[in-house]
Length: 101
Image 1: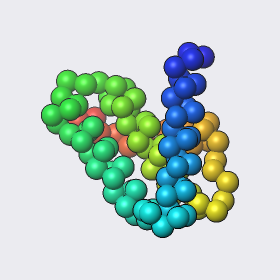
Image 2: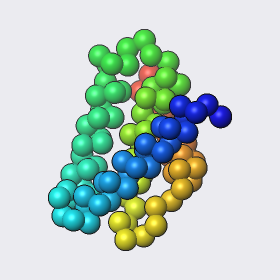
Image 3: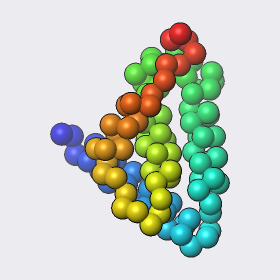
């Protein structure tokens, strides 16, 4: 496996853990994090950003956002699922883009 992929994997799990701490300390709510992540996904899948981009490229761009969205839905007091489990869940929840229908 590419070392950069492992670094990104670690970074994503670190951000997910930080998000849980922010929620547990009352700095942000789960809903506020969810809204921020959904806005990020909307920007990345918007026409300006994704025009001419293949579906697989859009999936690649949105994968970290979707993984963090799933991690955000986990209860902060419960152990976080592993990266591989979250990645599998992202793949299972993926829906086709409007131009793929």
